[in-house]
Image 1 (cartoon, rainbow, N blue to C red):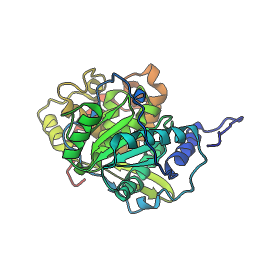
Image 2 (cartoon, helix red, strand yellow):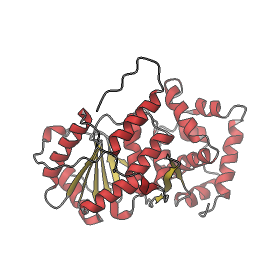
Image 3 (cartoon, rainbow, N blue to C red):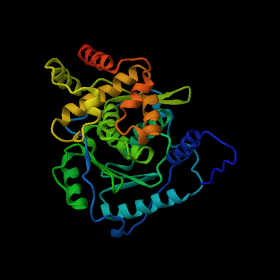
Length: 339
């Protein structure tokens, strides 16, 4: 890929978005073999798991227009590393699986090649473009491996064979150190979008706190996306997490937003409620047209605002945050599954 040189000040977010478009839309065929075990780390942090069930996403009619029909870009260091990762993965998975490289993504699956390519073209590519158009600015600098297994049996088998892991989640999880998504795609594409959000956020906002990391990821697990007038978009929808959250609100047991943001054990006890609260906070901000602004401002000011509370006050000038919290809870109670 030709380097972009900017002797004059430019909009770096726009430049990075263009780089991302080039990276993810060009088809790159892959054949190869050999597995380099040294590419895998001996120890890892715990995988990031979406608790409980997730549902699928809805692609707007415009989404299929965003395909891999764009001419392939010139080779780049990242695309070359993606190809090499694909060769290693092909040898590791064996003849039962397909490997498809769409740099920076390397997809391995026991689905048919046509099914993998369709999933990429109709779900991954448009959703990724929309996430970058809406939130992210820094494109991946390493390959991202996406393992898609057709049902629970094959998912469990490959989790154990590849990683020696079992019982982590029946839906899927993300391995940050290996930049790898492991998915039971038979449960729907919601988990794919959830875990993919984690993988992309790792490059864009490495210090993103758990509550917003999971809030955004959970928002996308039930979402719709597409392109209008050439502009990609994505928006979360009401999902199954609502009922449990409403029950906690009615019982007066929900932590304040400030407490949720600063909770050091967000993924500990009560994580189901924490995920739901973070998700519906994101949906609430989305419906007010403030979520993208909030994310970008928090990313910029994170060093001085590690939990995002000051940033929230900044994007809501003149708004009493305690009243905002009360309004948020009343909004949650008024929501219905059809909203």
